Length: 196
Image 1 (tube, rainbow, N blue to C red):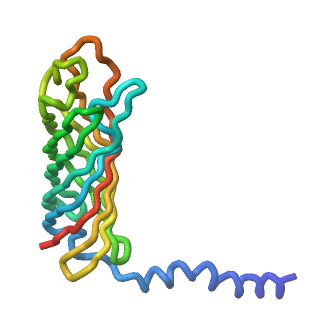
Image 2 (image 1 turned 30 degrees about the horizontal axis):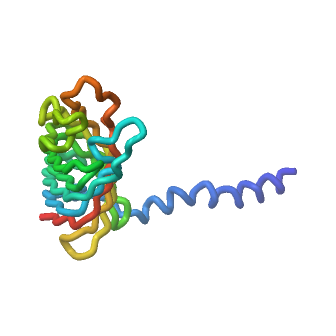
Image 3 (image 1 turned 90 degrees about the vertical axis):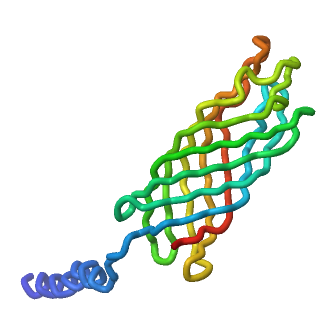
């Protein structure tokens, strides 16, 4: 019985020591995960602002620009602006948002991933909610955005970014007969991030 236990222990020891030996091969990350970043790209919003009940206006196309400035090893302050343009149900849709918040990022090999949460203001044009002929009750709304993204390097200080998030805004129509306008929107963005 004892030789059998000895053989088992000799065979099990390298298996148990393998994670420790492999961990010694991984290079520790000592530099900050992120430096300053500027980003510009294309953005798509899942729905228009005047869709309600059985009337759907479709998505809107636009742009996205952001600046990220590190505070600690993997936490940064992020300021982001984006705009969306199009026509929906005969109404011109022009919306702009400016948000500020925090971002947490980590490297995974050459790629880096991040999550963010931001709050700010949104602005919509007068013609965007002319359902009933009166327009929006206010052109400004509180806005919040939470999402995540992935950066893949394409050059020494450039990366290609893919980002998805959920945007909240609460634009309402001036007509008290119109209820149920969308407040949550899926947002997709892709473009180039410059690290400096």
